[in-house]
Length: 254
Image (cartoon, one colour):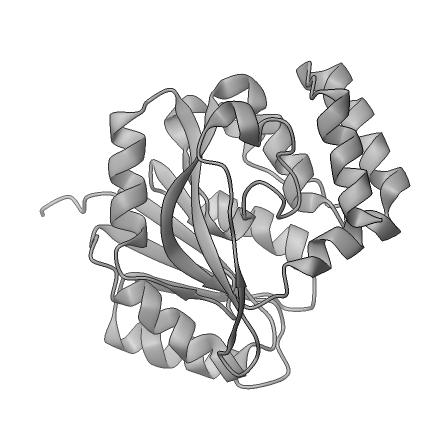
């Protein structure tokens, strides 16, 4: 019997009550120009038709793996379960309300292969509302030295756009802290700092259904949590952003 090859890329898709946009999200994943992927979706006990939509798409494309939580566990626990099931050397993320451009994974994969010292690469985002109207676009820095100053919460990169090279990482790093809300993404990204550089592509390959100003509101409302994260990251990962960048983030949020 021919041994099944492992997918090169695993895309993690947590789902909860996402029936309105889920079909469009799945189509944008399954139509990626880069083909050797697996899409791992876990439905976090949705009360709408999200799980039925996942099963419908699974019948059409075996690259989609579908699971369901027996009760609501929340985003962080669901993401950790997705990490545990991922088989690819590269791991990507996706929000069930969002849309990919068809060359997103291809371009990110090519970048990571050409830049083995980069542990994670994101892309630029167009921000859209519930009705697909464009409400903004990102201007994320491309190079590590600028991303490093604020690798947090939608300011210098968008977590959902990331593709990670797990070859650079020990296994125990691929886990989010379930007590790190509202900076779950930032807390996770800080753990990657010792293992390689960050980068962003300059092309717009992702449409994210959120107002970018919401990220500054989150920072403003949770300054104490942000300060604790910075102190923890300085102690654990020798994170040393410039005071100017820290002050700039706070001013923008105020």
